[in-house]
Length: 140
Image (cartoon, one colour):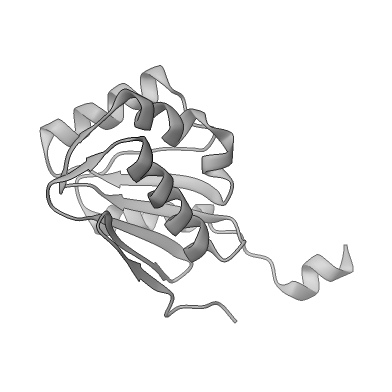
């Protein structure tokens, strides 16, 4: 059974698992530097509980990302260890530009699609859920 009530919150944001999708909601005025992104990755991996999962990012609260953080976030394969796809919800032009720039210069190893609304992002992420039971894994 999936740990649906797994929930973390720290100075960077709120992280939880709902319906097999990791949700990352950054707090207002968050600056994503290298130290912060390492915390974010640790939180994401904890929520993933060792299983590959899609990731929804609501980054409206982010002030800016440093270059080091951008590189470490998407070009670093270890940072994507439990991520099958990423759907950032960009309600601001600044966040959309940041995500597009990062994708262009640091191509992630998983599919990424930018959305303007959470509902559409969650629908797209459904196709990136890993649908295997423990029984399926043991039989192989």
